[in-house]
Length: 326
Picture (cartoon, rainbow, N blue to C red):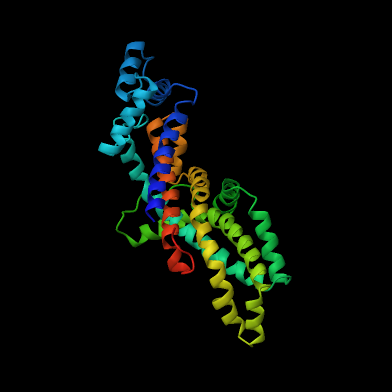
């Protein structure tokens, strides 16, 4: 267990370091982008070189890249500070991320769990009923949807149910006229989150369905399952005690691994629906080369995925006692 925790810390540190240096390879001048934003948003006159130099000193970009890296490490490790945001100066980047984070956490936690549960249950059923019409329909549906990116499904749902058939809101997270402590606020938040959530669930659950079906087909051919059928056990008991239990371990592992793909896919979905999560913030930060916000969101994603994998490694023995932590 100690070895896993040490490996986790080393990988996390190297990942954060890689993010810092890779971002500095992106062409473009973030200060010029910041100045252009000021001119376009507030109508400022062209800013001189002295002012640009002042901004570079303010954001710490007047130093060489290794000096910037040392400043970055000092801020991160000792102050838990990512530095100021370029596009919302002088707001610290971490404050900007924290402000948008709750919406993403709610959206992703609900969609990740729902897609995993639905995909797992349907995969077990259609794998058990392999070759039936039920299997053919859901398997074909899953093969098609699993190849479609999240954002394509999001655009289709947006056009269908927000514009052609205006059933759900097209943008935002809630009606602006409502207050937080209000029943109507909760209803409005659910309505606004429905289409973004459905976009993620439709794509994610198909992947779980396909992989679970393949596992079940393999399990059905095992000797112990045939023995259980020969004993006359009910289908319900076979499905729950033998098939579902044996598919749970690899699919639980896959849940932690897939988290990174779901998070990155959700970024564009949030941007399409103008959902106030870190996805929309990330896209806006890229447009303005806001290094501090970009690297903060990427590092948060890496931290989430690596931590989820570490937790899965540590709770393995609780799911299957035969698995030992080395």
